[in-house]
Length: 160
Image (cartoon, rainbow, N blue to C red):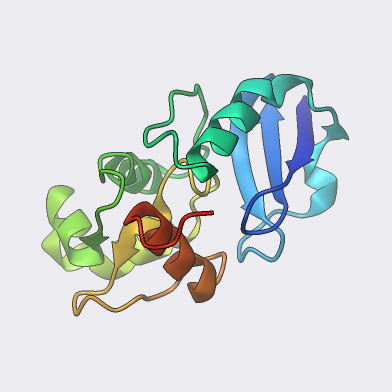
């Protein structure tokens, strides 16, 4: 059974989704690859108290590592990419190529990018920390301006 709620953030409303009480989605309003609204289940803030608290602390600059149970629903390759995202420290970035290399397949940077773009738990699973080989911002489901703001925030140059 799925449930969802909306919370405010400096980036606009975030939709939090849970299956059986376990977080399985954090979506921005106009995020690419966002599932249809009707798939989010009933609106109920109950399962999201701790998620909302930790997101609030993150946006306040008081939390750099999330400690939440969640479920990542994807292919085995997608899940392996998302696990690599969780290893990128707050305030740092990695390239798609570096992630592909960490997965043991240096030629898979394009596949890494596709998997990164389908990350269902934005912010918490930090897909915004992945950049192009030349250091430029490339692709972000929530839009490049949001990606830049998140990176600036984490580097301490744009506090909310």
